[in-house]
Image (tube, rainbow, N blue to C red):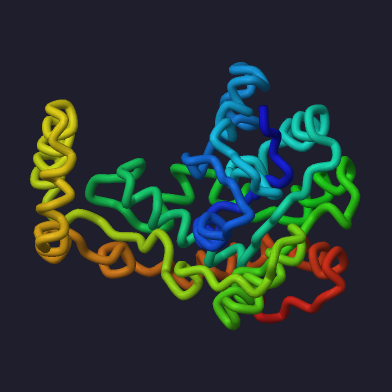
Length: 280
């Protein structure tokens, strides 16, 4: 049974989908079909064999892995990973923790975890304390580095990815000992744009129809209609950018979060030997 040689561990909303996409079409990489396996965080009781089944289709590829952002901030995960794969390589991606929290909120609104009349960021913070918890980067990194050697951990910044995607991709390929001349078709794509549905009833109807079509074995028909432009038409009618639907955070909220994250940013600067004034 093939075993993973690397794991992308997060953080959430920090370009993990982009990393998955630029690795997925590399000829020397075999990824889990499902991007977020979440074995070490939420499915550990399923056992190691069930985890490695995710890589059963791997062929001659030299690099095998998966990306689950839920791993980064869960306290039990580093020791669990080390118990099974002590030599594994880890990819971490981070971004301005306030912007990460706002993006996290947009995602929660998009998938319906927060709905109703008040979908403000402030209500999201009150509803979901992990907006802050996941941004305690130094705390979580120190937990991982207490288990794994530093040379086994690649730490990327979202801001660097945005500034130079090609350089960021090369850094990932080099870390995994891959051919860094590969140019992924996903290199310049934007992953996981956040949106909300204008008409929730219409989206419910769409999901119902999708489920029915799939149960009847008519997926080809769904794909054909999408190719003919129906999917694009539906998006234009019922989807609106979450950034337009959700009120911007209040200035006082931003200031409070800046204070909340300040010590963590200082500690991260020490870990990275890099100044992070762009986050302040």
